[in-house]
Length: 261
Image (cartoon, rainbow, N blue to C red; front, side):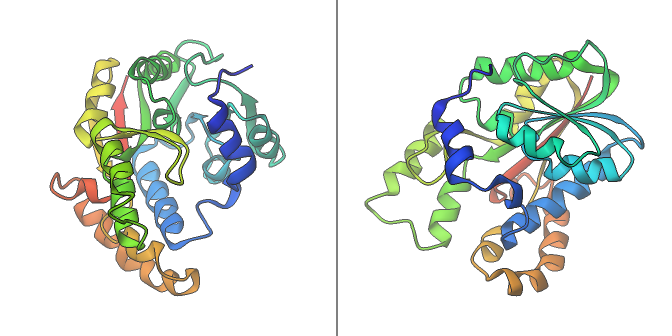
């Protein structure tokens, strides 16, 4: 049994259709395409990949199709059942803070969700420590984080931000934490350098943090899906050009950090 915050469990079971999150909006499509691009840039061919927090397998599917040997771990049993039904990779219930995999048993460990649902620094450190433990020497740990600016930028771009609810977003910006009352669930938001420090502190080297979606995110988020498709090539090109620019990284809702064991 995984010790998961009930608010997070309820969010993913009852309020959020995880399986199509990355295909039902322009923002989701942009996040998916850029995550694919970065992972394909970084992963060695035919790697043993541990996808921790892999949900219903949105990334595990294409990684397996690319020739990687994928094991998916997720704390939500319904997600694991859905992922297991795909049949091209193994899926099991598990906790990022206490992985069942053996030491140095995989080439790449992905944490594409756990760090922003572990609001306590000690829990994030434990998840990164576990990811390092199960990764072979020379292998990669790749972790996603949500930008500290993400909620404020989204609300300010879609007309939701008002003087009355502004404190909800400014308080989350100051602390990094949200209690799930502003649309998303319980989560922790990072600054890019903070995420880099967490990976370095976990003993990883050659740490790099890149912006995923880039500054065009909220344009696509507020564009009907059919129209957004035509904007995607330019948005991807823009994201690629500024992915490592320290002045623009925070304009992206998500970061992707890479470190080597």
